Image (cartoon, rainbow, N blue to C red; front, side, top):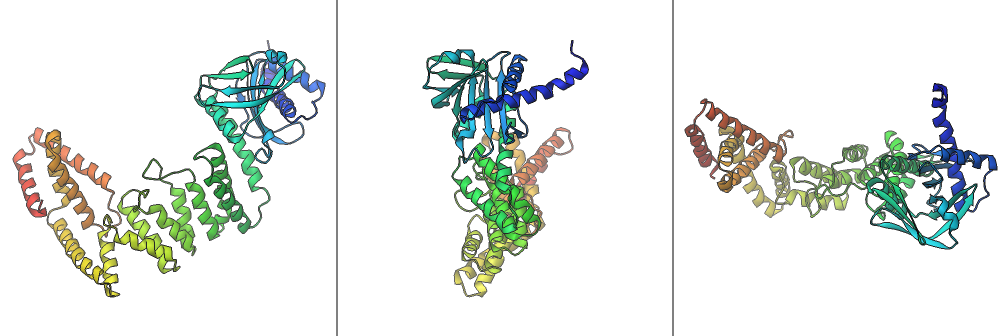
Length: 474
């Protein structure tokens, strides 16, 4: 039985043997010289140990000292799957390969075509390179970046990996392979980021490299491994320069954080890191940073951000600063579009904007300012006399009691919540519509619970509803 010391030493030995095996297979793909016989013997011993799924969390050096990442599966014999990504694979595609190891491959004759993958889609292989070394027979295929993505999806989501080699079919279980695939992708990303950022000295050089990576990322599949690689490298390049208050780097950093995020309205996510970077760039005097900040928040247009008061204010502030502080024509146009949009939620800001335009001689703005001024004053007065949220809660009880017959009441609740927003639009702390709607619903439930406990009556709620309808002209 192995001693505790031997048990501790075994993982290190196996890892070393695994690295040697990776070197042998990649050397085969590159038609490089075979390693020394002693190394091959240790490789065979490693396979005999019956290793399972394993992947490099960080790049390891091959026998020539070049960093590489690898993942492999063995089934307690001379059968397995090996994926290797070597440094510089983007410039040299032959450095990213998959190898299938099986004694049955020894009986095949070149050329051999086939495929590898799980279910659909699969990776078609025009030609496998065949090699037998020290009783290990392997068929190796070069993987494009698209092929790599497809294969990693098979590892993550598939149950079985099927390999077609001419007339030979081999299958491998993919149980618990997802973690190893994730480790390989992260290791591969580390290789790329290290190569992409090496040697960048000045802040200007960092920004130029990062922008080139982002330009390339635009043509890559959204959230693919390659696009994420470019994004990570761009962030690594731009972050230290932005930390040194280099405004262009902060703009680039914000753009990098947005790569792959998509539209906030259509399945995208909020990216506070981008907002922070654009804000810093704007504060450092970058008109481009101010414009990007406005563009991030802008709720107008087909793919705009969500229609919240915060986004209206963020868009208006960013575009206004780009326009007034930096004389950016596009910033002025976008500022005008945001402020004149009929769906603008910031009543106080719209009124001030129209009053300023009126003072400059814009007659339509004078007319709109008169209407908006009356509406704004009325909303504030109503909000003082009878808070709109209290009325929304009262009408919300109707929705809760009879949800199937309450479309009119629902419309009144929406009107009242918007009245509350307009009445308090000068207060930057006013919550978003959905938050206010949840608050009104909670207050309505509390009133109904009070009725059930005898602390309140339906008559009292009905009187409040009638007063609210009269006050707000519903």
